[in-house]
Image 1: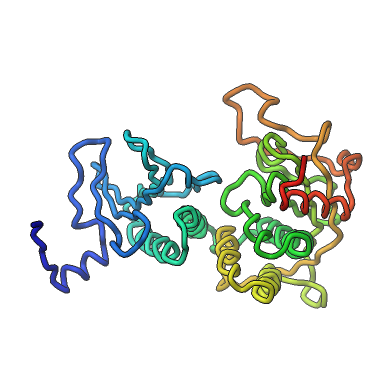
Image 2: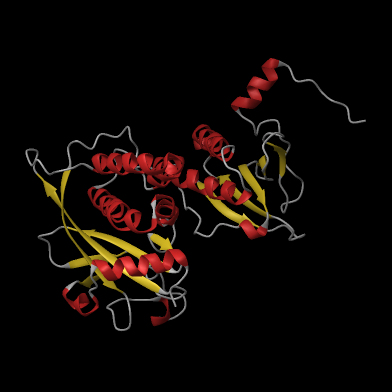
Amino acid sequence: MKRVVMMTDEAKQKMDMDPWKPITPPDQTSNVSGRRVDPNLPWGMFWAVDTDRNCLLILQHDPANKPESKLPKLRGLEVEMRIPETGSVSLLVIKLIDDEQREIFHRLCLDIISATRQVNTEKEAVERFLARTWRWHRLLRGGQDGRLSSEEQKGLIGELGVLKQVLIPNIGVRTSVKSWRGPLGAPKDFEIGRVCIEAKARRGAATPFVTISNEHQLDTSGVDALILHVSEVTAAGEDDKDAVTVTDMARMALQEIETLDASISELFEERLAATGFDWTDDYSDRKWLRGPDHTFEVTGDFPRVTPDMYPTGVGSLRYAISLPDCEPHRIDAEYVNKLITEGAHGDRN
């Protein structure tokens, strides 16, 4: 029979404060040493250390439940997928590189663990693991004041507008919130089956261009239809009665979601937080006016750059496209609604 060692309250308190401290590093570079986070947690979650005594949090899962979005890249941390030699399981690993962030990393790990307790399937646990990691993205990467920049505020207002005014009325609140994949690092902001939406915001009076952040945003490989949704979002004065802050937009979206289906509101707040938005940040000094929206279908000779247009080894491109040159591809609201509905029901050919 295995000998059970009773832990004193003092020892348990120290371990709770630093769960990696009692773990002995492994002898082989290919291995890690760890202990289960909680035997009552249905997922295989482990505190672990490697040969360099780096702190890790590991989620063991079925390979079929691997993440569908790209993994976060955070300052002082590494997030990666590992497949042991057996190949029967996959490991989602977050590793602390900068030991000076050990305390905040511990808080991140506790947040991840808490979030995964609330789901019913292993696939959801993987998604929550990543969603909470993205949520901490801005905090761990640092920033001037921790708030979203003006451009990020405009972008979020544009995405929330798509969610409230385009998706929810057509495909329902639950499918709409689940389709919001951009905050998790997906190539497109919204994925409704094989129909995708890339949301952009621009200043109404500005030169008619929108910035495309990378070569994958307007790539139609693997999708049946891609919509470019451009919102006009312009800085407003303090006295403009129609002006809103990014917090106002987030609150209105949350209220509508809670009214329609309160059970999906937590997922919405996780996606919202993954953008870098925090309810405690004060955005009252920056108000915005929403203007008309413009929608285009990305097909054929639509002005864009895609990965198949340049040699291997070139990437991370950032470029601007002219909206007047997109006019031949403009589509109306009725056609947008048709594409979205077909995507939600898997009817798009």
